[in-house]
Image (cartoon, rainbow, N blue to C red; front, top):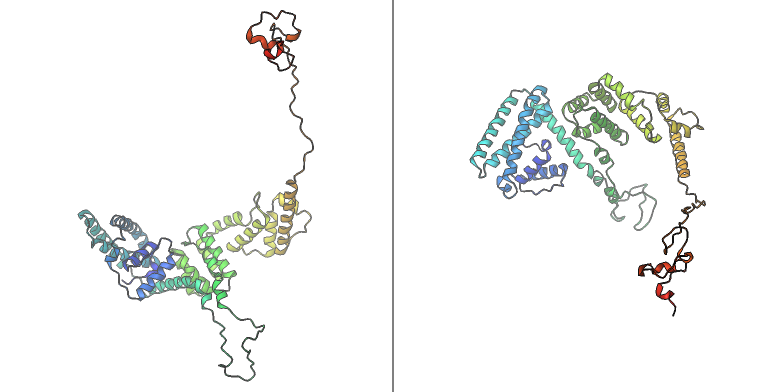
Length: 444
């Protein structure tokens, strides 16, 4: 079975490059790895298990094979029931890749127990392969799906080089030109007002489509939130770029799997545009009752406390477009007007009643200006001239004599004799005379 680069995961791409003696890094993207593997295959570089020496850890490789075999066993029955062509093609490629890995690992020196387990894994993969051979899938349909995936991945890989391939405006010397009647050529060194395309400028500009593709996440359409996010990015890619409907659908095929991929392929074969694809996806994946609940939660909702008015209006308009509510401009403006909270209503009391989206934009500007003025008033620093008094104790000091140890007088006014005082009580003599020691107080 031929190797299909577009169906390999990042880990499988790294393994295939290692087989061909190509070094990789953990920071490499899947698109870069696919480019590298395609270029190596074009050069007819054959895989060799000897290139895995000193690069592959046998214990880790054995565990990886064990996990992959168990995942294949668990997914066989689901794929047989669903009979999705894209899932069958992916499964066959994974099966072929895993068989190659087991055969390469058996060529190394292993324990007898591990060799037996690897042979058992090969038998399990053989049984899974025989089950899939019973499915009658058109080979042309398989080739068509692989070709479409390849074209989508190649287009995604080449998006970063869009501006590098622009046509250059090359001017040759006037002496080499053949004169044509009615045309005048500018002389060498002469300036003019003509606009000349500079490819170096275009090569430095970011790709306008790449920023939209970064928002896409791979989904199968069964998760409602992921489906709505996919539709949101799909509509943005169509409205904010100058791509055709067929080009937008081709770009989105690389980010869908399972039933969502099958439905988009069906719409593409019927040559439906983006608007018809949008309504078809909502009708197929979103039940009617759930759609009404989503309208109540996302469109006819109230503005949240603290939510800016501009964010609220933008989200309601965007969600109305995603859910394909088919409201007129006046109806949608009325819904938004009824959902504005009390804080913003107080700021917009002097504004006229909005009837168009332009009126809503004016309301956003007015609400933002008033909110900024309120913020400025709350944060004004006013100098406080009222100085708080310091703490003053109103408790009167109790007089106590150091001589007789009685309350009501001090030592200098004491009438008791002072001749028989102890040494440590000599300081009581100086009570009321200032800070003097007994030596300083004694007569010279």
